[in-house]
Length: 345
Image 1: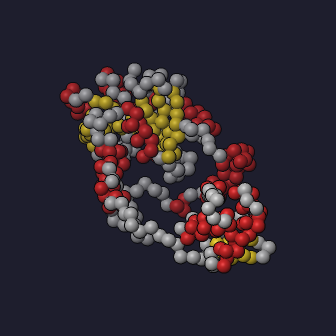
Image 2 (image 1 turned 60 degrees about the horizontal axis):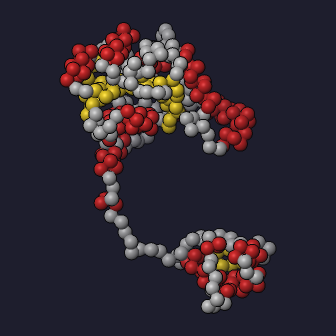
């Protein structure tokens, strides 16, 4: 900010320097106890003599705007800050309908406040005592010892490359054909689903989902002003006949599904049912956004295969996964899709 000082010939330079510093101190731009540049540094910055700066600093000190500690330098004193109070924006008139709707749909903001000892059956957040903090510390120290300061800088736009490679291999082991597909790491479901909706649907489009479904998904679909067509579910998942009826009478742009450990019902769709759903949507060229956040909850037998395993090399499924099996409640999500298009094959 000191480089902004413009000098002129109408008054002594030390008075101009004093006036400029006085103004920024009284406006709060230099806070209490902030250290001013040394007289030599300041003189060099604005290209004047050191004697000029000494006189300006002395005048500041005479007016109790700064104080000097011998051997340490000159510091800003505690002074009344001139506060602007005339301009006030009526934010209610400036907030967009999108922002108002976001606030209205935020159930966390309007629900009963949490109290110590309360057990919420709505949240899927685990008990913090289950986190292996020491293991996380070791993992972090191990990785930063390998990559050093590089790890603290801006990274790969799609996410941490070694993690992407690891997850792609993990998906191949789950039976997902990753040929010609790509992956992006996002900061949780909300960001990931918002990116997908922003990419494949427009205001007024019809989207199919299970009824009921994930409350945050409903919020995002409403914020994108989509026409949500809820399809009832039973013990084996979404009702095929009702999907057929919706497809027959409406142009459907996408389908959002949670086939395994459905939120909020906990329902698990059979693999045969998944195939039927996939083939039905494929017939009508409706892309599937699959939310597989809880697939690893299976305790007996092998994990449940996602719909993404059915499509093979086809490009019909955008797959989202909650990485709970790596770090519980770590809100990283990943999406896999065919790079050149979102449409079903």
